[in-house]
Amino acid sequence: MSVYNLGKRPVSAGGFQMYNGGRWFTGNGFPKSGTAGTSIDRNGVGAPKGSIYVDEDSGVEFINEGTQASPYWTPVSMDQRGIVGLDTDFGNCTGRLGTATTTSSLDASYPLLKYHGNLIDQNDANTAQTISYPAGGPLLTMGTENQDAGATVLGTGATTALWSPTANGTMVIDVNFTGITDILTRSIFVGFSASQDVALLEPVTGATTTLTFCATGTQGDNVHGLVMDSQLTAASTLFLATNAADAAATQTTTSAALTVAATVPAAATYIRLRVEIDADGGIRAFADKVLVKTLAAASATVATALSPVFCHGNTTTTASLSLGVRRFGAWAKR
Image (cartoon, rainbow, N blue to C red; front, top):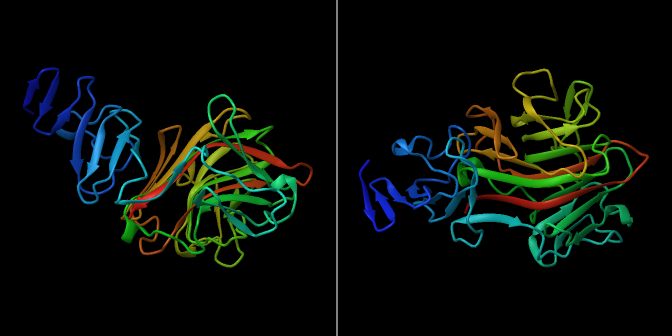
């Protein structure tokens, strides 16, 4: 690789290299994150943290929040022509009142953001979605009703699934959140589902060592995501559940295909979870920017439309639950 020093800014034949070691380079298609992701060993250099990648096909720019050995690509901005989705820290959002009785609502200030779930229409303070501004920046507090299998969901503003791997290439959901009070009476799902039912139930539930996909309508079909359920023996452990084309009613958490070396931390500690699905149906899962699971091509049905889903479920009838969300992002190629 030839490098030419123009003042303090070296330029390489493989792209522009910044003085601090970061690089600017191009490629075709949205980038993939992880240890086999876009830029790994590129020209023998790769992409150190802070590097910029530009997709030549769409013109969309991404920044590496990860490392040179395991990049973690995030859009520089959602205000780019070739990308669709949302990425918000809730600073401009208005939330949803607990007194609301509609089965779903779009945020008045951010209409792509959809609040929904099977018990959100209860006219109950427990279901409020409130915005506050504590130290550390804006925070969305998601409330979930004190009914077993009650679910509160963040998704996108559509009644049908939005994107497919075939049409939209690499699709991503990325959420940073923490449990308020204990985490051992709740469930979490971060991933994609073919269902955008406004009264969406938990896509996957757990009991002992069994994960069961929702049997209501098609809500458990074509579901792919990280799941934690306190009713499992491994109560705070994350698993990567996937059910392409309704191939399985249940899966066992002892399966190596599901096992993830990560847990949801105790209350008041944030975790950032991400799921990526590629154009070929391959799936990657991340916890705090670390790749924790990779599934092969065709793990997701590539022609099936999916939507991003962040679901907070209650596993007890004795207490309402709250979750603090710092950021919610989901995107794909326009």
